[in-house]
Image 1 (cartoon, rainbow over the protein chains, first blue to last red):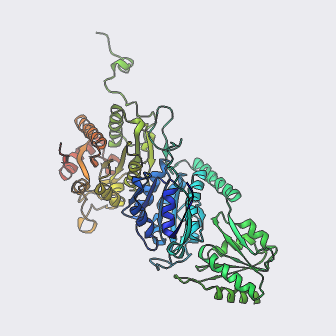
Image 2 (tube, rainbow over the protein chains, first blue to last red; image 1 turned 180 degrees about the vertical axis):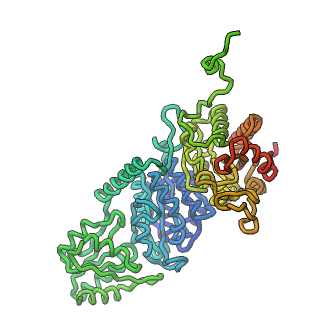
Image 3 (spheres, each protein chain N blue to C red; image 1 turned 60 degrees about the vertical axis):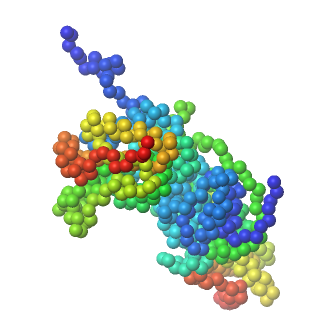
Length: 355
Length: 258
């Protein structure tokens, strides 16, 4: 079968891509601006075709714990929510990370704190990239900037989750979730029937019982486990960094932005170039692992970096850590559901250049 | 007649009661006289007798039985506090031919996990919930539970549970029995040999109903906590019979139509 071209919302693309990726289960709870994911899956009713389970849980807490149970069976399972709901899921996420289970979590971010707004924001960066729940752990975080990437990152996310036995988050926002674009969809994959050796699927005589837990009351063993997790995150930093560059070859000033911010930076880049400013853009695709090395290299060649985010300044801290004082770094952002215009980004770049 | 020695008694052919093959050799962490060990043994016996080892997935709670996976030789998932029914829901939906059970205490099931308990039962998930109700938080050192009796003393109700301030004990079996999703709700005990036999019978019914996909089975075991209640095992069983049983009467609350 060939790829199929459709016009879809970002949220719908996630749902359709999940079915086509051969997902075994989706567990969710409605929250704006991502309810279309659950609605789309309920209407598509993949249980009848691929056998994929779709369930509306009684809460985000229950939904993520259903994901925990399903992941512990070695199944390809996922959930989605938006910021306040993702906060509720943090308990389950830290257990999943602690039990070293694969799963996919989608956050279609809205402005906060608290109930905040239903408009797009990028204010959950810290929560997504630094752990989110308690304990030392990281998610592998993918940041789509188009409806196409919403679809593509579902399959990529599942692949990475199983490769590292680690939860993967797609960190999107309300703009990309709600907007419609054309999207190439992969052909339908069959759901895997493989029984994974570590999964709790019922103990046959051929192996000892499998126990999925994040508990170890022996401090020395627990520390060894922590070190094992850190080694896994270091391996991700070696192998899984993804980013995209625009006009960085001769750039004197670099925008750094992901997701929706990267899209408006592309326009800002053109406007700046038209005014004779040699601007470039680095778009991190993985937020953890962050493209630290590449930014550090670019820091040797540029006069400054402007981190553009729809937040009070979160990713900018990782940019600063990456360049380690080698070049000037400033943040520009809007909050509360406001999206900066390319023009105001250019104005800010000009004031940054002035010093 | 020759004198019977200890070595004669422990000869395999002389043992009337043996450990289930599904009980591991790990030393249990439970306090002397606690009902958990007995309940575990009964459950292991039923899993063995029903030949369920190869298709069982158990979900353990947070509380005294958090380490249950060390004692029964089946696949286990260790849930966050109160969330076991959510895990069980996914396991059963993704693998409908497996035998899925949760094993939860009163803090886990009736306080922090109330929503998961009620909604799992309301959806009629084809799982078994085993609910050990001893009216106290044992693991954390004897604090008041949602099922602590009125006037009962605990570390966080040192003057006795004052229902005007702390609410009344919650009867979870009665609540879930009202939900159309449950097919079998019963309250049992394991403090006597007869009680254990009845508990095992209830477990076997739950296995049958799960095989027949009839809905959620909920077996409450009214149990004791000698350490938390600050009593000897014998005193705790007597106290349980005199105080817990009148409030949480044993017997079936709901049975499916045959």
